[in-house]
Amino acid sequence: MSKSEEWPLLSSIRNPFDLRTLPESVLPDLAHELRRYLIESVSRSGGHFAAGLGSVELTIALHYLYDTPDDRIVWDVGHQSYPHKILTGRREMMSTVRRQGGISPFPKRSESPYDSFGVGHAGTSISAATGMAIAARRSGSARRAVAVIGDGGLTCGMAFEALNHAGGLGLDLLVILNDNEMSISPNVGALANRFARLISGRLYASVKEGGKKILSKMPPIREIAHRAEEHVKGLIVPGTLFEEFGFNYIGPIDGHDLDTLLPTLENIKRLQGPQLLHVITRKGKGYPPAESDPVKYHGVGSPFDPAVGIAPSPTGSPTKSPTYSQVFGRWLCDMAKRDERLIAITPAMREGSKMERFSEEFPDRYFDVAIAEQHSVTFAAGLACEGMKPVVAIYSTFLQRAYDQVVHDVALQGLPVLFAIDRAGVVGGDGPTHAGGYDVGFLRCLPNMLIMMPADENELRRMLYTGFLHDGPCAVRYPRGTGPGVDIDDEMVALPIGESRECRLGLRGQGRGIAFLSFGPLLADVMEVAQNLDADVFDMRFAKPLDERRIIELARNRELLITVEESATGGAANAVDECLAHHGSTVRHLAIGLPDRFIEHGARSEMLADAGLDGAGIAKRVDDYLQRHARHLLD
Image: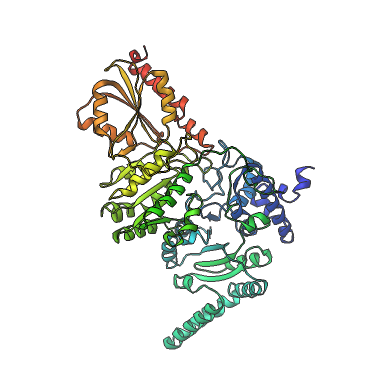
C-alpha cells in the first residue's frame, strides 16, 4: 500500500499552507490519520508519546486558523509538539527523532521556521509569547502570538510571573491551557463548550464592553455588576484566577472536539486583549495503553509493537546492573529506615529519579512539589532550619533553574541539604536542553559546598551517605544510565572528606610519568588509556574540597597531570589549575572535559564520542598533546 493510500490526507500535507486548503469537514479524518501516524512512528523510533497523542486536534486547529509561521505558536516544554513537527514538513524525518543527526525531540529554531522558540524546560511559553507580542506591536505588525502550556507547566512560578506581567499590557495574546489531567463528562462538557463559544463570541464581547461604558458613569453600580459577573462565571468555570491576572478566561472546552475548537479559536482571533483558553485533553488519546498509563507512555525509550504495547521485562533474564538512579532510590529507602529526619523532595521527577518505592513506603516523608525547582530548594532549606535532613533529587539541568536559592537559601546559611544530582553530563536523546554539564562550575564557586563525583555504583552509595552525614550543603552528581557493574555494599560506609583513592601506579621512575586525575564516571575509560601509557590513575572523588595534598605531591613527581571529567569548562579542571597556581607549581596540565559547545542529541555513547570523552577520544587528546609538547613521555 502506498503512502497516499495509507495516509490519504496526511500525505498531501507538506506544510500548514497545504493544511489550510482542506475543507473543514475532513479535519476529523485528518486527526485520526495523524494520531495513527504518531503511534506508528514513535513505536518504531521511541520518543515522547502520550502528550502528543493528546494534542492532535489542538495542533490541527491552530495551524488551520493561524497564519503560521508568520503567526507565532510557542509550545511549552515540547513534549506535546510531535504532531506539530509532523504537520510542518518533518513527517518523513520522525523516525530519526532523538537519534544522532536526526530531528530534535523538542521545538528548535534552527530546525524549522515553524519552531518559533526553542524549548526543553517548562514554563517558558507565556514569557516568550509575551515578548513576541510586544515586538509585533512595536513594529506595527498584525502577527499574533499563541502560547500553549500544559497544566504541569503551569505549576512553574515563571508561568505565573508571565501571566501577571502580560495581563496588564493590553496585548492581543492568546494563552492556551492544555489541561490533560482531568476529563469532562458528556453533560458537563456540552455545557462548558456552549458557554465557551458564547463568551468568546462577538455578541457577548460587545454587550460586555457596551455595558462597561454605560456603567462607567455609575461607579457603585459598575462595581456591583463586576462582582456579579465574576460570581456567575465562577459558578460555571474555574477562570476567576486568570481574570484577576487580566486575562479574559474562556472554557473549559473539549480539546478533542474540532466542532468546538475551531469556532472558539475563530471567535478569539477577533477579540482584543489577553485571552486564556482552557482546553481539556486526554494524555495518550486514541491509544488505550497510553490512556490507562500516561506516565509509562510519557516517553518511550525503545521501539515497541503497537498491538501489544510496551512489553514488560522478561522474567528469568540475566540481572542487569542497576542504574545510578536505581542505586539512589535504594539508598534513599535504606537511609530513611535508619534516620527519621530524612525528607525526600523532587520537582516532578519521581519516576526519573527512581523514587517510586520511597513514595510508597514513606508517603509522609515524600514531597513532589511539581515543576517548581526554586521552591523545592527553599522548601528544603526551611526543613533543614528545623532539624530535618532534606534530600533534593533533581536533574542537573533543572538545578540550574534554582541557582539563586542554592546560593542564598542553602549555601549562605550553611544548611545541611543534600542535592542528589541526576543526569549529570550528557544525557542522550533529550539533547542539549537536558544536558547536565554545568553544575560543577556553578556549585564549586560557592562557599560551604561539598561536591562529590562517583566513579561507580558503590561509590555513589558511599557518597550519598557521606553527604547525608555532612553538616552543611552537599552535592553528589551522577550520570544517566548504568555504571561499570561493581558490587554494592549493603552497609553504609562514609568516605573521608577530601581524600582521593589510588587506582593504578605506573612502572616509570618518579619525575618522568603521567598521572590521570579522574573525576566521576569516566574512570573505566581512563584506566584503559592509562594502561597503554603506563600512567598513574587516581579517582579524585571530590571536586570540592580537592585532595590538594595528592595533587601537589604528584606535581612534584610527575611531568604531566591529566584531568578527565564529564563536565564543562569551569569544572574540576579549573579547581586543579587554581590549586597548582596557588602552590606555585609549573607542572604541565592537560584538561579533558566537555568542549565549549552544546552537544547535539544522540545515544549517550555517541554524545560522549562526539565530545571526545570516550576511550578513543581521551586517548587521542592525550596523544595529540604529547606529540606537540612532550614526545619524550611516549618513549
